[in-house]
Image (cartoon, rainbow over all chains, first blue to last red; front, top):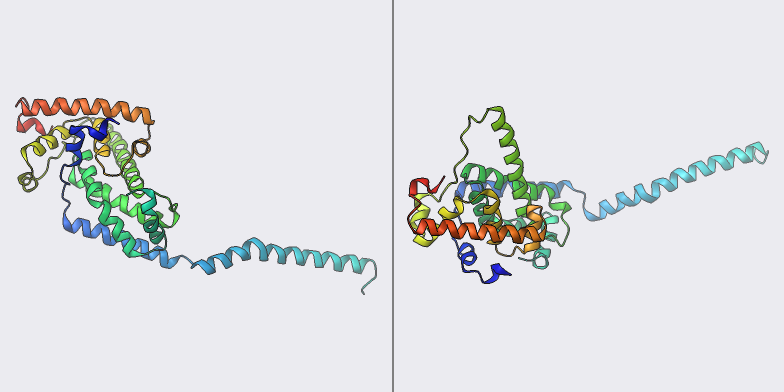
Length: 84
Length: 192
């Protein structure tokens, strides 16, 4: 690659960083870090998140289907006079 | 830093660890700010884009892939912010019928200039005189740890196009440096 041993690009790479105002740098760091921490605290922890996902993906549909099935079985039984 | 070495930091950041954020900030703040200030030519704009980039990282931390290469991610966001700003500025400029003056490329402050060698000062002036397209590719190549395919991703162009643009930009930079070193560029026109 031309840039690997190009002296001009090497000079460019070695150019000193441009200095940012310390107050601005500190303000940005604090603001962004606060967002990281705040979002992490607001998110449910791993176990609760998995439990919640399991409830909505498996338990809730099973309960709904079970209720519908029981209702149908009861109706069929009632129609056929098995239960009064 | 490569994506493999970034993995522990990315995982810690996703867990919301402030120390991970600090480490990432420490590792990339100088290169990111230098890139933005040289690219935009304006300290105020560079600071705004810098802040917006870090806020984006913070708000998207939980959704990062474990193998995210942080430098590439940060520079892509910063570059996209810059592009959005340019588009907005063009619309704004058109509305004002070109009445606004185009921003001049900012050179280092007098205090910063004092710490630079003559060769470094010439290089800063030459970079400031390049077109934005040439400037951005050269500045990205100068970022430690960014591979060419990542630069292509940052710029949203093909790998071959990066090489082509880099070759032209390098030639233009060399031309500008020659002009500065021969004295045909006066300090007053250096920041145009």
